[in-house]
Length: 193
Image (cartoon, rainbow, N blue to C red; front, side):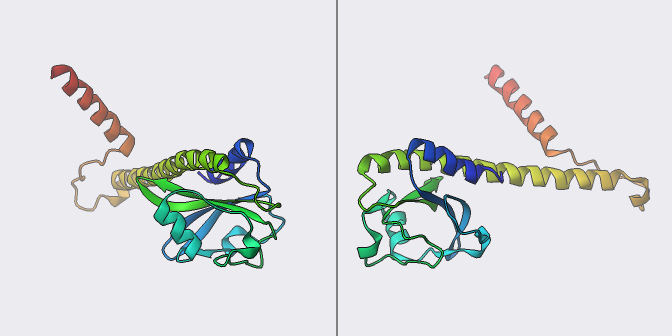
């Protein structure tokens, strides 16, 4: 799960060449960085954030399509943060999952007017797939953590030191076993119908 955001950016750079890129996910009123590519700034990513209330991100969220700014130096809505390099061309691409915008991918190039509609089309197609992959990775991590907690509970319940009532509670099956049983049941059910 940890390497996925970086792989998203490096794979996208093979599809659409860019000078710098970053992947941001919305957490409440802020966009928090997950990965960056091509930045000289060595400051840890967690020290950076953007407002999810800014005009540019709101436009991307509302339109649900990429936004290209040909020259950020003349864009009235642009906020030049101290840690951002002075690139001229910028493209923001919504990252969506389950029909909802969950963040954005930002791409930059040094020269003004350097992104076009074909770049936007490829970036949007890729960002949609990246959103699904990120969502699936986080869901998998949550399920794995839940399974680990359940297994610890089962181990703790089955230890002799924890038996204070002389009757053991029913064992809690690990999530993987529950899922396997459910799949078997659904297969049997499907063959009988």
